[in-house]
Amino acid sequence: MQDVNLTFGQRLGLEPVRDVAQINGMDARLRNALWSELFHVFTSLNGVDYVYRKGDLFGLVAFLWVEYYGEPLDSVSLHIDSAIRGIRDRFMLAQWFAVYSFVEKVVWYFDGRQGQAALIETINRTLKRENAGYRFIGKTLTPLTNEEEIAELEGAIEASAPSVVTHLRAALDKLSDRENPDYRNSVHESVGAVEAAAKQLTGDKKAILSTALKRLNPQPHPALREAFEKIYGYASDEKGVRHSLWDATSEVGEAEAR
Image (cartoon, rainbow, N blue to C red; front, side, top):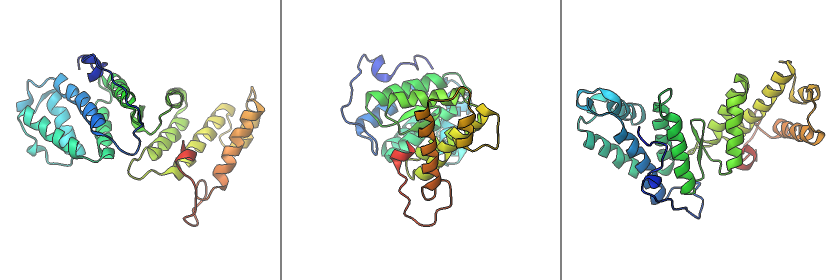
């Protein structure tokens, strides 16, 4: 994947910036930009043995055809241009949230392979340039437009204990579901991450958050500790966050989940 660390716009010497954030939709320019980056990925892979159903390019095309589109493997076109054109046609007709799901799938294909981190960085630059309301955090496209928030979450995922990371990833997945976001349970998982971190730091696996905070050494600033306790209290009291939902009146929304 040559020059995968450069966006298509950079390779052409063009880096226009959009003025209006795109959150619950996608204009043609953003869709085209994302496809251009993915097309570069396709054309960067070795396609010498494609006709024999072998090699890196056939592996990616077959993966998307079977795992994403749910089509039978023997229906994959053995003509490279035709195969890529078929994927492009579907990409261009897909709803905006399906486009993001497709991009995530391509990134997941490279899990454990060379070039994944560079691909994520490239896509993020494209999203930022086109003022899209999503960024990759880890391997998940997440609706966070604040760059500081993204950096903090990435750092937390990289540096935290497995129990904390499990909660954080679950919270991100529920927040990032573009068709049916689950804000209530995203809050639940986020609070669980904080509580798991406090338990890890105090060594008390049975402690609740308020108890664990008092045992931390050194002690956090009183205002910070109070803020955490209030968030925990909110999550405990709000209908359906930490307890069963009795009715449909819970007010947990995107702001709380963020």
